[in-house]
Image (cartoon, rainbow, N blue to C red):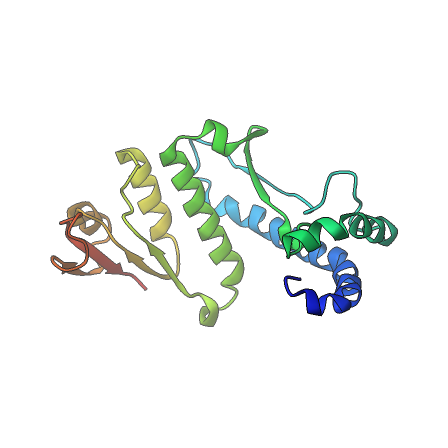
Length: 209
């Protein structure tokens, strides 16, 4: 709480924060399970990497039990002065981090830039899959510069995966011929000037329903 005049309300807000921690954390674990399951639909895209393992931190030091109210009350009392100096909450389920592991090792340590891009796309597709319960909620998938940092085989794997999605796609790229070859039924338009002088490239947007 940045305004010192409002700090009289801090105990009441802390009480609410403590009460909601286990609820929020459980919801996030449920969402993580759904995301992990949905990643199986991108197994072809991740064939060279293997299916990643998703883990969620609690947002607290490892010794703090999120489901134990007494632990949380004691912890926030001990950290009260620290958080008041910072002016915002430093701990809690809302501060949790998502960890992506490949064979037990953080992906960021072992994956190339291209592989990290594939992981990011796979996670976005998995997220879209978990929320697209009905046609009314399918939404739109947008991928900018699809071919960047991907070799030809990974581009092909990504094209193949995208073609299986029953959603509208908007894809941009500096070279539209490969996109046109893979998405022959798509509509194409070009942006030749005015977007970015540095790129001087032709952008292609492709819609597939």
